[in-house]
Image (tube, rainbow, N blue to C red; front, side):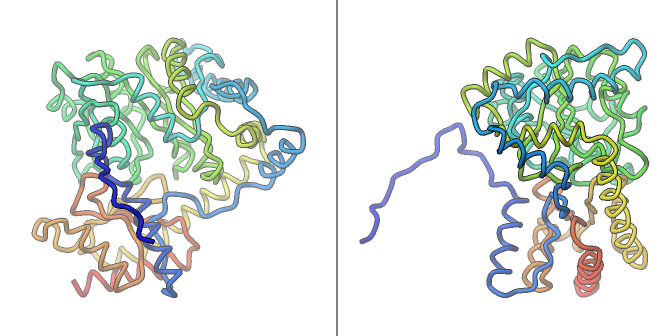
Amino acid sequence: MTPPETSFVPSANIAQLKESATIAVSQRAKALRAAGRAIIDLGAGEPDFDTPALIRKAAQDAIDNGATRYTATEGILPLRTAIAERASALRQRTAGGETITPAEVVVSSGSKQSLYNACMALFGPGDEVLIPTPSWTSYYEMVSLARATAVPVHGKPECGFKVTPAELATSTTARTRGLMLNSPVNPTGSVYSRDELSALLGFARERGLWVISDEIYRRICYDGEAVSSLDVAESRDRLVVVDGVAKAYAMTGWRIGWTISVVPLAKAMTAFQSHTTFNPAAVSQAAALAALTGGAAVDATVTAMVGEFRARRDAAMALLAGEPSIQVNPPKGTFYLFLRAPGAGIVPEAGTAFARRLLEAHDVAVVPGAAFRTPDWIRVSYAAEIGQVESAVRRIIAAYRSA
């Protein structure tokens, strides 16, 4: 029996919404693998390591002890306390840094929801939000869902795509209300220095802008932990720091993220969350608590994982060093390489065309730069076994040579 045709027309809320390009690439790669192709997937934005055993054990114990029911919307108090204590340790390294309380923390179902909560609570029709570009694809869509206008501010490749206050100023208008920051940066792997981050926060403070600082990759940095906005911000009055356990602890599937903000905003985001997803999964909160309080045992696994990412980065960069025609942004953090596609500036959507050719003809999945508002580039994840990374980079080089 043929199902009846529908006359579905999307509402104005989502009419302009675009599918996540990173998820689309991953799904296409999985489909080709299922069809028998030996695909190397370098499109994924998640560590390929297992969640540390201590954290998994804590989750198992939590289930046995009844962590199967609703919790407080904003998360369990022990987890919010642990987050606040870590944030306070960062904040108190600054002159006059204050103690952050659990009341300023809202735990959500992943840092993506935390970012969305902040956008919905802060922005609305008529507002403009500055987004240093290239940036993670979902920032633009979240701002749009809040019915505000995302304003890309393009950084220069020769500066690692990092933006300056002067570049932000050229895109600032009377309607500018916010600034989205991310360091280490997805997709470029660039990391803002203390002085660079301080200058951006100072610019936002002078203009009265809200800053949403996405710090999910902060611990995946190759010269010590990346600087947090909590380290350098003169004031937290208009600052929202977003973090989570997904990347540093290899816990993407556990879906735990959080915001740190002033209490009135935290209350507003809690109210919003109470009508959308409500509380994050109780067992995932128990696992996140173990990650944050596991001490040296957990920290050693993070250090080892970052060390392996460094080795993969170095191996990939060594191969690319022999190809001076390939322009690559040297990553200082995250687990991404950002490469300029052949035909850039000549071929429309050069990155998309090259990513398609890599997948269909060379069995390598990468994300086209159009997802990050940079259509001449591609993002290559090295969150894969080092042999696969090296094999994939060799295939990419071969594809460049034949372009």
